Image (cartoon, rainbow over all chains, first blue to last red; front, side):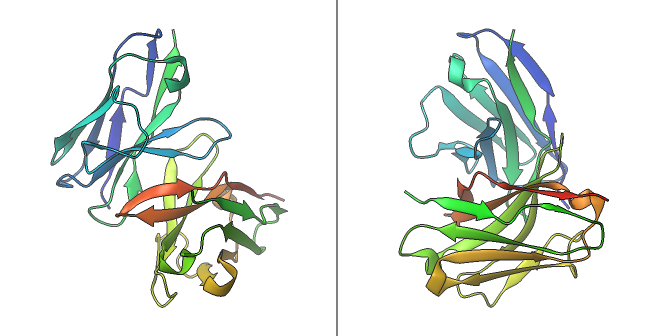
Length: 106
Length: 117
């Protein structure tokens, strides 16, 4: 099983600040890495697929990078609606998720 | 737009059974790979099971294999998860999810399963 480790567990920031989230895989997943946003009581939403491609309708402030074992999700300038939990997910070998990183209001 | 709506979640005793359903909108349900993904309280997301478009192939995470059965009825645009011999650790919100271009692009809002005596 491929284990995904996300850091930090919690990120406390203010609107307008830059958020940088990390995801590390226990073995190479090539670029088969995606990112999801999840708000309480809502369905998770696909943000980024294949490490760096924005999903349909996702604002340009969200960007992804990385390959192999190390990946990053960057939110360039936080909007109020961006405070949520973010999960990375790999599809290289079955499907596993990271444990999540919470972006909270400072 | 794809709409997915889960139902069937409930409180059940350990060792009991439950059947979850997912109703899907759209005329192309029969072309989709479908998944169940769960989230235990305070935990992250976990892939549980998936099924191919015609229902002939299924996969399960090790912790549920032999206890859970995923199935579908394409004529009814419906996905199911039969859960038997339930354990406390199966307590979670269960999401019905469609995959498109290899990624989980459409999710339902989830249904809560609580396994407790």
